[in-house]
Amino acid sequence: MPRASTTRSEKIKTLVLAGGVIHEGIACGDAIQEALEEAGGFAITRVNEDLSVLEAPKLDPYDLLVFYYTLGELTDAQKNGLLNWVASGKGYAGSHSAADSFRECPEYRAMVGGWFVTHPHFRQYQVSIVDSQQPITEGMTEFMVEDEQYITDYDPRDQVLAWALWQGKPAPVAWTKSWGAGRVFWLALGHNPQACRHEMYKLLIARGARWAGTRPTGE
Image (spheres, rainbow, N blue to C red):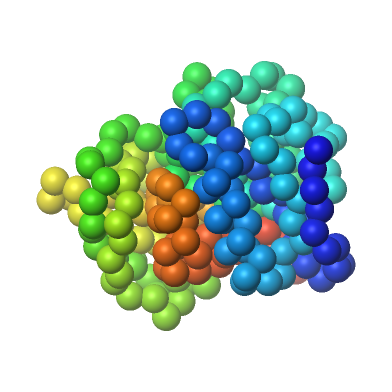
């Protein structure tokens, strides 16, 4: 059953959904939830594994979905529930293997803005910020992580916020995009719970989630 935290009206009503195979999905979900709670401003409900929560109208109480899940399959009801909900003006913030979920669903890939292709061995590498004036990356510069670098194919219309080199070429580390009236944020970092507790990861996931879950001024 979902478990809800405090529900103050000014907080972003947030569903954290974690699970799947290969990665330590639930433990990573715990670390992500901790980062959001530490940042403040999120009223969090947590669900593990249960993709039926994506079926309409179960997402209606929320403004934001924070998603850490690997592989799996979506039913038509789950796919339509999620994509229509985001397009209605809601927010989606996916981490790491969120770009490797539901491989047989091209509509989900289109919503996220890209998909997993490969990764080098778990290692240290440098992340470079593209625009330090953007709200998610404001004041940030280059930093080092120890993580599994996701290499993705992606929509050239994505607004890439950070890059890391792979075989001499830049690969996206974070991007934003729109889906209908909704906002989408994806962050490549976060292979395991330790990576999800890196200070820069925590800052990026909290800022990205807050951006995705906030409707633009005037709406």
